[in-house]
Amino acid sequence: MMSGKMILGQTAEIPGPKKAIILPSAEVAATMIKKAKRPLLVVGSEANKIATKDGDLVDSAIRVMKNRKITIVATAHLAMEFRKRKVKQIFSMPLMNLGDRLRDPQWKGLDGKGRYDLAVFTGLPYYFE
Image (cartoon, rainbow, N blue to C red):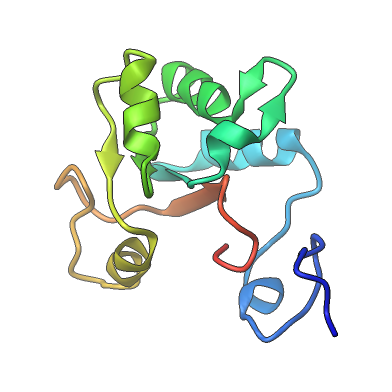
């Protein structure tokens, strides 16, 4: 019987470990975001439960948004967390719909300005990422 808890990098009957890149550090993520022309930050349902040194992942996403022009899309109930923290420019979309849109070459993005060249996922259950 398998434990209900997923371990980072654990291979299971999901595509994540085979198709995603697990970044070794925050600096690598920052560099990738800086180099991207149209990055998208996807903030998932667990973000307000994951503590960081300066709050939680929602706070971290807000700092990234302020320091770098980046579009943020919140999944599940997280849009309300951003609004509680006075963030007005936040998009919300179910994760499965977003995944379908990201693979659509005709999709013009949440803001209608074109496709994203980088999608960063955070705060989601591992098996969704």
